[in-house]
Amino acid sequence: MKLKGKKAAILVEHHYQDMEVWAPYFRLKEEGADVIFVGTGTAKSYQGKFGYPVTPDTTADKVSAKNLDALIVPGGWAPDFLRRHESVLKLVRDMDKKEKIIASICHGGWVLASAGIVKGRTLTSFSAIKDDMVHAGAVFADKEVVVDKNLITSRTPNDIPAFCRAIAAALAKE
Image 1: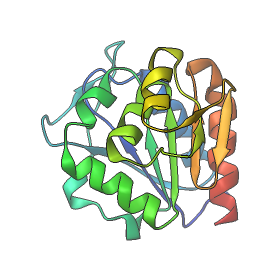
Image 2 (image 1 turned 135 degrees about the vertical axis):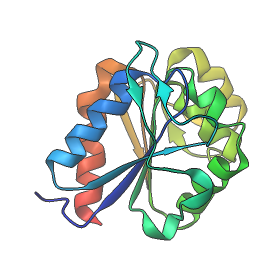
Image 3 (image 1 turned 30 degrees about the horizontal axis):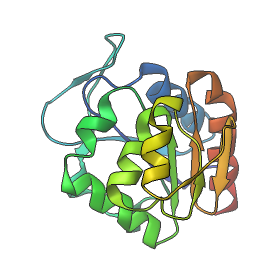
Image 4 (image 1 turned 60 degrees about the horizontal axis):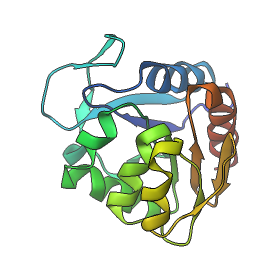
């Protein structure tokens, strides 16, 4: 239980990629971390792309970066909804300012770009949003996981094992 005492939040909204939420959730819980689901407040429960529901523990406007060790941004279509909320973008910016772990997979890069934290950073994402990342100033690397200081990024559900290992390793160093 090498992550006992660590707290991570996973952002959720409608049409999240089910595996990109639940695999990190269970992997970090398995290591002893306290993991919460953070929504936008638009619904009491959100459906994943494959229909699996998640009920958020709280909303982004009620969470502070000072109380978290890591923030996970899953993919699916949820990031397109998440990035429309200033409370989500503020949380991402605050986590970055405090150099706390921000882990994003697949389309999650949209949230990072909208928060304005990708310029000059090396990252990866789902190939369909590569141009969005580059236009936001990121250096794109097509790898299963890319770590740039406090930022951890991956491309697709196939990269989840490497993604989760990188998050757990970064949290264990904190």
